Amino acid sequence: MWPFRMRADPEPKKTETETSGDALLRTILASDCMTRDQAMNVPAFAACVNKITETISTIPIKLYRMVDGELEEVKDDGRTRLLNDDTGDALDGVQFKRALIRDYLTGKGGYAFINRTGNRIKSLHYVKESEVSFMFASDPIYKDYDIMIQGTKYKPFEFLKVLRNTEDGRSGKSIIDENSEVLSVAYYSIEYEKNLVKTGGNKKGFIKSPKKLAQAAIDALKNAWRNLYQNNTENVVILNEGLEFQEASNTSVEMQLNENKKTNSDEICKLLNMPPAMINGGATEQDKTNFVQYCLNPILKEFECAVNRDLLLESEKGAFYFAADTSELTKGDIEKRFRAYETASKNGFMQIDEIRLKENLPPLGLDFVRLGLQDVLYDPTTKQFYMPNMNQTGGLGQKPEELEKKEGEEINED
Image 1: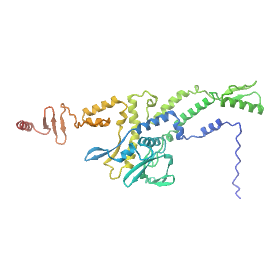
Image 2 (image 1 turned 60 degrees about the horizontal axis):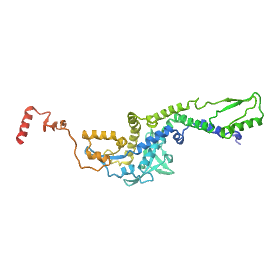
Image 3 (image 1 turned 120 degrees about the vertical axis):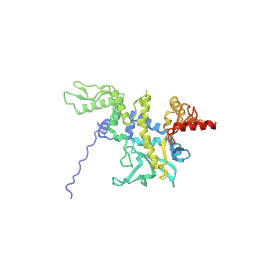
Image 4 (image 1 turned 135 degrees about the vertical axis):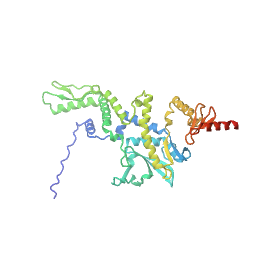
């Protein structure tokens, strides 16, 4: 009835002589897409991702408020407790941030459900990015969408979303998707080394014969060769007269795998703006500074923007904002940290008790700011200046006789 439909020929069955290594080779060559699990098996990539996530997970998030032009920290807000300590879910604050940033780097984004009661946030619940899907409109201007979790529909404001290189506001693009070729080279190099170890380092090749062999001889030769590569009981294959083995692959030394691994490791570090010395050892102060400035700060800024957008009320935006306290990054270097405290104290923008609070020490009640007698204090609003070492005041716009008259009045008062 339908003459143009042809019955497909059945695929030939696999022969018994086909090895699992051949199937693996075809799978590797046919697959061009790197998965998250494959990428995390690359030591350099896993080390970079773990370094970034573990560092960011220890940085506390604080809430600040601008009141009459003055900035103050809000210490009694429950949202900072959810972000830093107890999320109200199975994950604590450190695990919560680590999971979000890992999905941010290696998946389509970090997602967390915001459990609200009215305007109050009760808890934050991390959701694996693989569990998140979307229903969205095709309008390129008004990017309206809904979030789907196992068939249940949610609105975007019900989720905290930390997205990397997003173009639609609902999902981002991971480093793995953007750089699958570089990661695949490193991954398949490791797979090649693993196969070398499993086969005892034996090279692949083929047998040359001056005359045609019988099928029984071919089968016996294949079985002997298979035993040589698959186990350690057989360590020799006897080639009869006229048979010759021809190598068809190079060793790891000939392929310079060690040199290639070092090069691939440095290239992977570039993908995450990570100085290679941060994971290889021997990092200098400049390497640590570059790590914070070029690797951590962009991710922290993305996280801050996401938290400000999704956790602040509309009435709070503009006056309140969340920010990461990056001073925690210097806690491993006590000398550098104390030098920074000394500079802050000498220049008057930190008090003694503020410094002791950062070091988890009890306050001493020393609520004062150090002022050096060698400085002249100037008020640009009134154009008045004060010299502490002479206990005199003056103005830039006053005439000399006015200054003399004022000084005489001050002497009479004394």
